[in-house]
Image 1 (cartoon, rainbow, N blue to C red):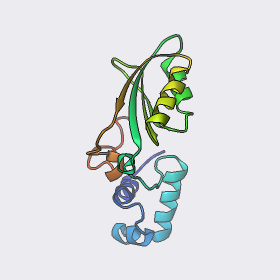
Image 2: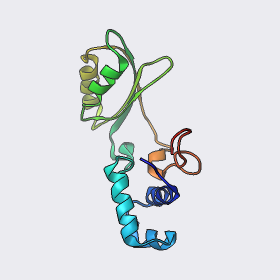
Image 3: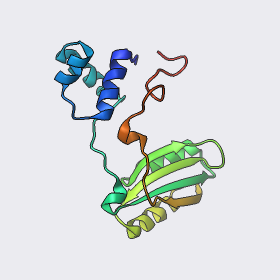
Image 4: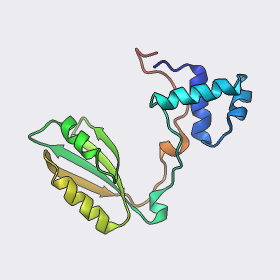
Length: 159
C-alpha cells in the first residue's frame, strides 16, 4: 500500500486526537470530508491504523510486564506466533541481540501475572524468560503518535 503526504497528515492528526471530526481534518487539509472518510477507511482496512482509546494500565492498578524470551528447539517466529495468541499479551516482537522474542503484557494483578508466566513457560520452544515489571510510565509513543521523521516517512525502498 502506498501512503502519500495526505495520508501522513491524516495519521498525524488522528494520532494527536483520535476523536477529531472528519470535517475538521478535511478543512485543514483542503479536501472533502468524503475524501478523508475514504482515506481513513482504506488506512484502517489495510491495517495501517486503528482508532482506539489508550490508557495507562499502571494508573488503573494493573501489572505491566516485559518478557525477554530465549527460544530453543523451535524457531523464534514459531514461538512468537504462539505467544501472540494469548489474550493478555499486547505486543510480540522478534528481536536481534541477546534475546529472541520480546513480549509485553498487561495483567489485572500479580496473581494473573504469575499465571501468565506459568502459561508462557509451558509454551513449546520457550527456554528462558527474563521478566521485568513496569513501575511507572513516562513516555509511550503509541499515546502521542510518532512525529517528524519517526514513522511518518516511507521506509527506504518503499513508496
